[in-house]
Amino acid sequence: MPTSSHALLSVLRAHGVDRVFLVPGESYLGILDALNEFPDIDIVTCRHESGAGFMACADGRLTRRAGVAVVSRGPGASNATIALHTAQQDAIPMILIIGQVPRSHLRQEAFQEIDYQQAYGSIAKWVVEVTEPAQLAAAAFKAVRIATTGTPGPVVLVVPEDVQQQAVDAPAWRAMPPARTVADPETLDQLHRLLDGAARPLIIAGNALDAPGGREALLALAEQRQIPVMVSFRRQDLFPNDHPLYAGDLGLANPREQIAALEESDLILALGTRLGDITTQGYTFPDCPWPRQALVHCYPDTRQIGLHFAARVGLACDPTLLARALRGPGPYPASDARQAWVQRLRALHEGLARWPGAQSSHLIFSEVVQAVKHHAAPDAIIAVDAGTFAVPAYQNFSFMPPQRLMAPISGAMGYGVPAAIATQLRHPGRKVVCLVGDGGFMMTGNEMIHAIERQLPIVFILANNARYGSIRKHQDTVYPGRHLGTSLYNPCLRDLAASFGLRSDRLIHSAQVDALIGDAMADKVPRFIEVMIETPQST
Image 1 (cartoon, rainbow, N blue to C red):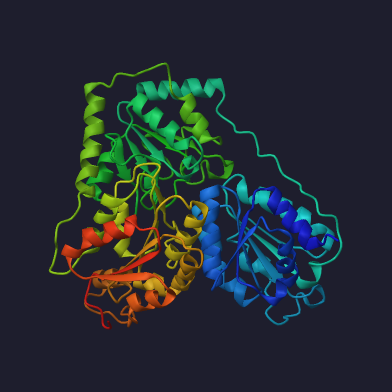
Image 2 (cartoon, rainbow, N blue to C red; image 1 turned 45 degrees about the vertical axis):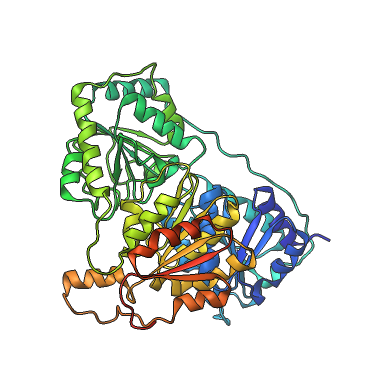
């Protein structure tokens, strides 16, 4: 007899959900039991709710369907909050299902009770608490639509434990995706005139182009119109980084010389980006709220258009379709002035992207990242945790689609290992490399056990400097030499990984780097490499 939990899962399955990440809890035993009747939904049992949530984030980003995590009430839901924030910051479709106290105990400060509307109202796109079994399928149906439309994001579905096993019909409703829209002919004519008249145009490409055909449309438009391309924060995999039109990324620390050059642009075509604070250098490029350049802002959500910057032309439409529509009969011969503009921006990027040389007697992590780049397959995927160790991955790696970068826009530590697991599960035929620091690894590194359990050939590369390196860097800037709270006393991380069952190695000297990284990248089993980028306090 189908139950309300079967109804919930039937709707999710109808929308393509084929994998669920969870930490079990007594508050959702009804849903957990119903999963037995859905053998086509893969169950990934995690060791911590943040790990389950990060995996759902990565899966949602890769599939563009809602990534699903299921956790218990109270402590479990609290642990998963970091993933909700990551999904919101990164515009990732995600559904967090939370078991809840019985209906009769709601709003009575019961054991492990939280009012999730108050807790998550400013993070999630929608929070719903289902109080009738017959409502559960409809709530799931709406949750999928809200999570995946407009600006994608997280939805929280709260299910009391006594609303999970009542007999109800189990529909397989599937929402039809909204029609993809593009500018009307009059607006397209205006945009063509703006492009034709621009001397120093610039494209800023963002996350909404991470869609089928998006990268190809962006490349074709840039090449035909000879427009340099900057990518938004941590979106380096949207455009071939070795292309003469690639001008770099707008990130945390663009040098003033580069920003000054970009400010000389006379037309900014912002495609698929929300123009958030980091991409716009703290809302200073372009000028806020009224840019000195003509700003064309295209994003498939009316809320984002004009939210911070007044656009000359604002379009709540599909950026991939717009990029295709802006291609004229061409080609458009580039003037000497346009060629000089393109070459200037490219030269600035190349100066920033040049691999650093040896800086000390210690092994530096950029040497390792350079070896990863050298041995990476054309379709490799790099999952990166938060920290200063990751700078070479963003600044120097030179991504070439279909290579992918999986990195948290929110800067959340602990993302790397779970994201690598979810990514390898989703793309078993591609090589996944996880770059993680010792701080982030000790937060969610236990999820590495999935690589052994499922024989996922991930290469985990850990940068060990025995400190919270990003915060130490800020300390040295603001309070030089005062390092309270940022030193770490680590176990032997190589031995820890070995105890999980991974083949585990340690890098100390530069001479070891290329051979060991090359061997690991070619291997068919999970590997772990601890990189001693400083002498740690414990070995």
